[in-house]
Every structure is written in C-alpha cells, then in structure tokens.
Length: 171
Image (cartoon, rainbow, N blue to C red; front, side, top):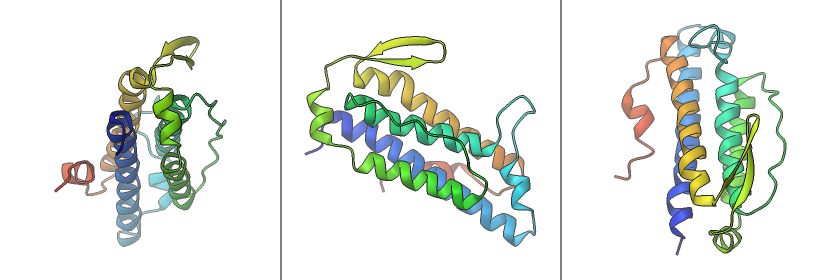
C-alpha cells in the first residue's frame, strides 16, 4: 500500500507531467495541421520578460524529480536546459516520469519525518518531505504546467480546461 506522501505528492507530480506531455502533443499536432512553425510555439512566451515554453517544461520536470530525490535524502542530479525540439521536451518529461516511478518508496517512507535543507534561490530552507511537497514542489510544478498551457493557448492552440484537468480526475 502506498504511503500518504506517495499517494498524494508523487501521484500529483506524475499526473501533472502526464498532463504537460499531452498538452505539448496537442500543440504539436495543431501546429502540423495548421502549418504553424514548431519554432513559433517552441520559442513562445506569455510576456517578453518571462521564460519561453522549454523553460516551463524544464522547471516542471526538475522540480518534480527533486521531490523524490529530496524526500529520499539523496542529492538531486544537476540538469541542464538543452532542449531544442518538441521531441527533446517529450524525452525530458519521460526521463522525469521514469525517475519518479523508480523512486524507492521504502526509502521515502523511512525519511518521512526527517528534515533536509534545500536551496531556494539565494536562500536555504529546511523541510520535511511533506512540507517540501506541499509548500514548494506542488505549487511550482502546477505553476509551470499552467504557464506552458497558457503560452500554447496564447499561440492559438485549442486547449480547454479539460485538457488540463482530465489526467488529474479519476473517472
């Protein structure tokens, strides 16, 4: 039986990344159908002072991966943002989903009450795995998934609320 942490936090980031991949696939199909350059979507951003689409995928996936590493009290690997194509973005999501799926649930459970320190920009904060999930990871992952959705919607991709919600809902 899955621990509450695993059932909630790990399942939530998995669903968010699955949603992100489906949104990207819908965007790529739309661009192909409408003869829109994939570079147009790939380089799109909501506002000039915000990061473009690939960064949103990078941030969502690295935050999701860090959750299971930090909850296991293992230092997360350093990732570089090198994506140049939609295929690269899909691969990045698949790698993150694999890391999450392969996390040692017993190790996470054994460290459930232990604190760890994590850098947050120029600061370092102390968390338990649950507080890290609820107060940092989930808000960040959701933010970047929704920002990717918003970028694509702004570019005319026919996305709706159900495209975002359907993988979160279990029916």
